[in-house]
Amino acid sequence: MAKSPSLNRREFVTIVTAFLGTLMGAVVGLPAIGYMISPALKVQKKEAWIPAGSLENYPEGVPTLFTFTRTQVNGWEKTVNSYGVYITRKPGGKIQVLSNICTHLSCRVNWKEDLKEYVCPCHDGHFDLDGEVTAGPPPRPLDRYEFKIEDGNASILLRET
Ligand code: FES
Image (cartoon, rainbow, N blue to C red):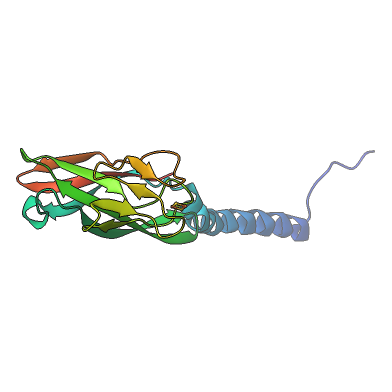
């Protein structure tokens, strides 16, 4: 006569304990794992409007340096980037926003009021008031930022890569 399969008391307790241990581990562990990996799953917005203040801060026809920083979070890595733009108020309430990064090898250009030009200190690149290249090795004009003006205040559109 064959013996029917059955559990003795010790085997039953072992199986129930293992099952409950696994269940408790999942209940406690899965949220903890989700919490730990959530920064890597977050996608940070790559576009942002940066408030640049009142138009009154920018004299007409004179490029004025405006700087700001932006913190970028990529997973667990946090990076603080600093940006500089030259804002020039134009007649009629418009502005022009040019990057201060030279298009040659990315040095920072400076506005020279006596020359009425942006000058790059690295290889003597020159740009006119509108950012067009007038001398030196830069291959293209200074980059322009989009902007908006609301209630006399300017904001510039930052697109991070
Ligand atoms: S980096 Fe500006 S001219 Fe070379």
